[in-house]
Image (tube, rainbow, N blue to C red; front, side):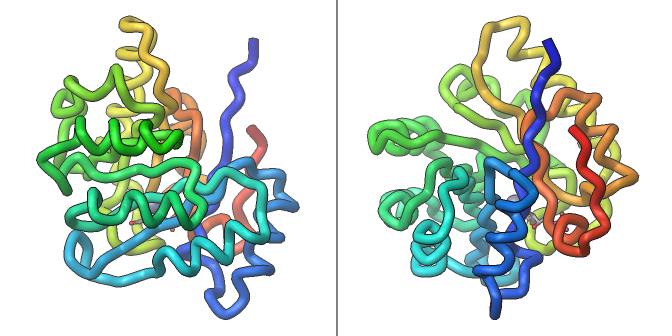
Length: 211
Ligand code: DX5
Ligand code: ZN
């Protein structure tokens, strides 16, 4: 069986004055996911967009909205992002003490729970949540900005997460985010990624996706 790999374009690199066209471009590329990067100016230096923008995007697409919370205290925002239309809520292990409770909160609302790690966090730090999450997002850049270069040493984490799910029967998707372009995409797909996030390469129009 050929494994299917999905592209999840990140709206962070879209023209914010024309999000409707950006969503159309994503739909024309037959992507099943849209990646929605939320930045709070604390966990990462910049502020991007939030619940009202997600609600407007929800109104014009049936794609799965994959919300990546790069925020402190994500527990304060989970309900409002779900109310605004999120299908997946992915938060950072580094952003909260109570990951287990947060996963439960997301599941109690009937949504998929994802967890993400920054480049300096090892996969071993996720050991107590891997059985419970629906998605693990491996950051291959330090979060906060689009258009950075992929850190090659992070790719090994994808391979490790793929091995761990096979060995233990875990059900999570492995997603990867940061610096994916024509030169780096094969390395993350070969390592076992299921969902590949792309911002600047996708919206530049130069990205060739043939998975
Ligand atoms: C970075 C964000 C990414 C970003 C990826 O902090 O989480 O989703 O949009 O952008 P590229 O693909 O340009 O690295
Ligand atoms: Zn992201």
